Structure formats: structure tokens, C-alpha cells
Amino acid sequence: MIIRSIALRTPSRCVTNEDIVRQIHTHNSERSPSEVSDYCAVITKLLRKSGADTRYFRDRQQGERAFDLLIDAVQSAISGAGLSKSKIDLIIYCGVGRGFLEPANAAFVAKAISLSCDTFDVSEACMGWVRSLQLAYNLLAMRTYRNVLVVNAEFNVYEHGIPNIYAICSSDRLKYSFPALTVGEAATATVLASSSKKWRFRFRSAPELASLCNLPLPGFEEFCCPDARLGLNGTHQLVSFASELSKAAMRQMIAFVNDTYTDVDGIDLWLPHTASEANFRLMARKLGIGERLYTKVFRRYGNLISASIPAAMVMAQQDGVLRRGDRIVMCPAAAGMAFGLVEGEY
Image (cartoon, rainbow, N blue to C red; front, side, top):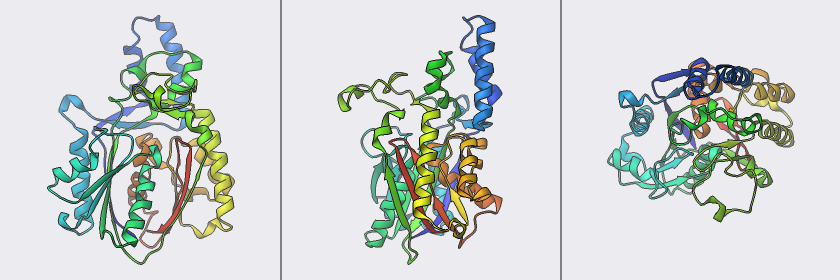
């Protein structure tokens, strides 16, 4: 399999940490100024500690739409791959951001670009893009398809965040509510083609940690064992115990890498899903991979969920640290919890 092209599109409205703080002030005008100021000081400290700086939201007042950004990315990726759209045999839609439980969101992408190819969706939180690559790799290897388009539209801040995330909450609730303030928005499109290049897909799962990060639908109680950590912010709102999640992810990923690689120096670039920056710098030091762990996405774009790794690849190319022929490892940790090590030649 070869990654022929990747396109990234982000909305136009740049939101800084200072903008977040101003929104908290605006949405809590009924509270005392001192209470709001104290709360905002805590938020500012947490944002700085996480490494967050900016993120991008849709400008709805200017009519900016998630689907338009996605289709722009799709057209750019197909063009960048040097293909006509008729050469795309399969579209896989992945990620958390979606407009439909049914039919497959991928079907609407195919319709928008006037294709009658096969379509289906993949749902696995921040791991969705990497799982889609695994499926595409196997399907390409079996010669079921020749060219596969993997897309995601991680647009969630209005659908699963704003305005609720700006409400002042207790310190206990902040432990699992703060991460929503770091989420950004983006669409990516990736064209994959069959080739003789081999990839390795390795995964580990820790389902006992599944409740540490959840975004429930109405009636979720009917579909799980009772768990006090589920749905703490209500339906369609993120719950993420960031501290516990980060510690578990770093511990598990370090063990996973050490169990898999005897020589990490053979890898040119490591690409994680970045939900913070500080923890990954620590992980890079412990693994001895230093600057080869690419973590710049979070500071600029925030937590892009399943779009974070393809966004990182676009940024790394622009920075000149990712080149054709490089040996790369995608190393995402995702809610569930799931951990991946995906190795191949770019």
C-alpha cells in the first residue's frame, strides 16, 4: 500500500486560549466576577500546561459548513494523487464527527462528487483513521479495490460542546470536562493505492479503561454495564478523565513500543494522536526518540480526534521532516482504550 496523497482543511475562525477565557466570562455573567476570574485562572493554567495554544472552529456567521470543507479536502486529495475521481473504488468515512447514524456518511461524500463506488463508515474514536488504513490495506492486498479514499470530518464543537463547555463547573467536574476546551475542528482526505510496499498493523486493547473517555448518545444506559463515569456531562457531551487517561496511555504505549522495537533508531518519524503536548514530550524522552515524535498538531490545531495523524503528516511534510521513503510509525492511543503501532514506508 502507498499513501498517494493527504489533504487537510481547517475552518477559518482561529480560537486562542484568550478567546476561550472570554467566552467563559460571557457565558457566566450571572456569577460573581471574582468567581469567574478565579475559574478562568485555573482554565488558563490547565490550557498552558497541556500545551494548547490555538484551535480552529467553523465561522457559522459566514456560512462555513463542515461538509463543504470536507469535499474541498476530498477534491484536493484526489487531484494530489494524480487520479481522476472515477478511479476511486471505495470511500471509508471515519471519526467522531458525523451527521448521520445511518446511512453511511461515506455515501454522502460519494454522492457529492458524483461517484457510484462502494462506501462504509468506521467508528473507533481517535483510532478511526488508523483502523481505516488497516482495512484499506487488507482490501487492497486482496485486490478487491485499487484506490481507496479515507475521509473524516471532525467537526464537533457545536454539536457536542458549545455552549455547555463554557459553563463554570466544580473542581471535581473539571477533571473530566476540561478536555472539551482543547478540541479543534478539521477535515482530512487520504488516497491509498495498492503497491508492493508492506505495512505492519499492531494493536493492543484495554477495554477495562473504556469509561475514562466517552461521548454518549440518548439511551446509552441500555447499551452498557452500569458505570458511574458514563454520561457525567449528559448526552452528546464529552467526558474525559484527562489525567488518568494520559497516564494510562503513556504507560501502555511505552510498554507497547518497548515490547515491539529493539531499535527505535530505525524509525525516521513517530506520529501519535496528540491530545496534549507535555505528556508526549515526556514519552519521547523515555523512549529515546526525541524530536522524531511529531507533536506540533496539538499546539496549533488542538485535539483533532481521528484527524490528528493525517493532519500531522501534512504538517510534517510542510516542515520538511517527513519525506517520501521515510520509515514511519503511527502510534495512536484512543478511547476504548486502544493502542496502535502502524509501521510503513511513506
